[in-house]
Length: 217
Image (cartoon, rainbow, N blue to C red):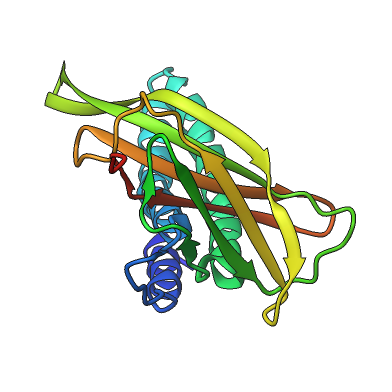
């Protein structure tokens, strides 16, 4: 299978599983992550086909550095392909699940909470960690012009509450966001919710960008 075919199949799988969302339902970022990994696989795969020929020509002149570069790129292709397959499997199994915000939206100086459901039965040994993160964006001059760089302002992690549901398992959480933090503002401040589980019976990761507003007095 060529790298172009691989990225096409991976992208088609992810796009075919896009979820419909209402205002209080936030789609998962796992789909974007899988697509990025498939594109990386295709990009590196193209170099894997070119570099050996160039390395062989250079080796005829006694230069062997390109062989080392070709090996590194080959390792990168293998890693990217494995990561892309794993991300796609996570998306197929869990990623279509949307995050339901309660309340919607959350507020600084108030509650940021919600829940999502995944098709698995919860057990006493399961542990799901939820992270709420506030980031500030800043324009910086780079080699290719102005770039928007995000830096963490505040972060808190907690163990989610797990309970049975008609789908399988409900993951619920409630954070209290400090009042001095900035609300969501496009290209300036954003709030993210990351849900992760890495236990013996459950491998799960999903990220969401959630709206957090200024508190209404």
